[in-house]
Figure 1 (spheres, rainbow, N blue to C red):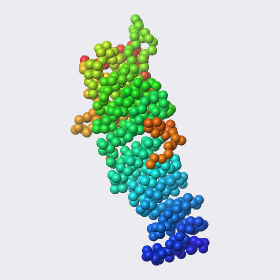
Figure 2: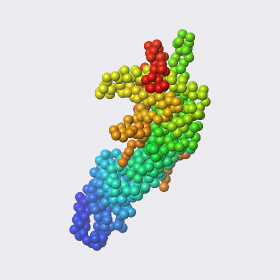
Figure 3: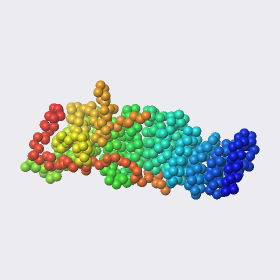
Figure 4: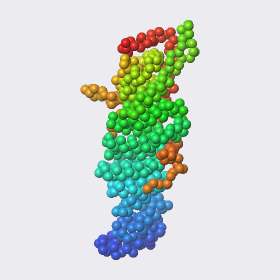
Length: 538
């Protein structure tokens, strides 16, 4: 068209006479190019290409040029939009960069895959020009933008930051990310919280002991451990679990879990049976006990250690029944044998064993003789059933290797054997006189950590929760069911969260659960003397 030809001649004119003094005197010519955005498809395509090309020569027209390019980014013609987006980084100079980053962040809402990839690439390119300026635009939209823009901006940060070179993500930039993230975390959904923890835990400056301690404190603040725990409120329970799950990988011998373990002992354990959850099919009680067990390895000095150990001990007793009374004919007078819940006992016994190390005379000095005798009777009864179960599992798995062990049934039996062996080791310790707390086990759901052949295995090598070694506020978002400590709460939409392999051994394992059948005359060798013999106890 005539208009397109005219724009092309102007572009050629400005290119041919490339002296800045000449170009600057032809502001009217550049204005013609800007006006091309109001023309037809050909004029718009030329404008999308030439506006950024001469942008730096006309600073007084910077706002008009950026607005014109933005109009092209929103054009109905997808090819024009893509061309305009591709050229946007050329506008990212000086004070204009945060604005360009803001515009690109808004464009993340595009549903066109090619367009979306162009936006991602454009953002990454200006990140390398000025990381803080780019982050300013991203966080501005996260705090104040539309929900879809906020969601995609957070996902951009969680997936792309780790791809940037170290010279881009320097200490100053990481400090800026942490400061801005704290603002966002005042008002987040559960999914957003997990993504931000992923972002922050990946920062190099937070890989140190002090950095991990900062993250633990951040999680504790989100969990709001000062609030009254309401076991009947699914959102309250879920928030605590999600926050604890983010904290667990951060704990180590130098970053303690004391605050979380204390809260679980004082507020959660006494209400274990009353816990509710919005997640269908989740064994919430077992999930809580597993988290407590993982944290217990890294608990530091606890103010109310004896009181909390007593709460843990009392809860353990609930899952370690007394043997049923026998009638004169030797059969069970009460009818049904108590059910032994191995998965729960593994968690509680492990937690008690870990905390008991800090008060080794708890069983002998803090309990009266009658209470200690009662506990040993329960241990004895549990251990009898345990031996039968271990024998059955070993027999079922005998001779099976390779592919045979990969069937669903056999995988469950392998886990069951881990659980029962763990309990066996811990019971042996507690039956020493005085009780011992020296043995180390790897919790059944955790991978076994290998030690060097020439290096003695330490408690940190074998305990289950050693963390892996790795290299202005916006409007309240009530519509997204956020929580804002101390009064808000997580979104109940947890579809994207994975709780791993959940459920107790008793629900999963097809092998016979301990009951009356395991204590029938067909197992005459299952007695306390036998247990002591096979475990080398007096």
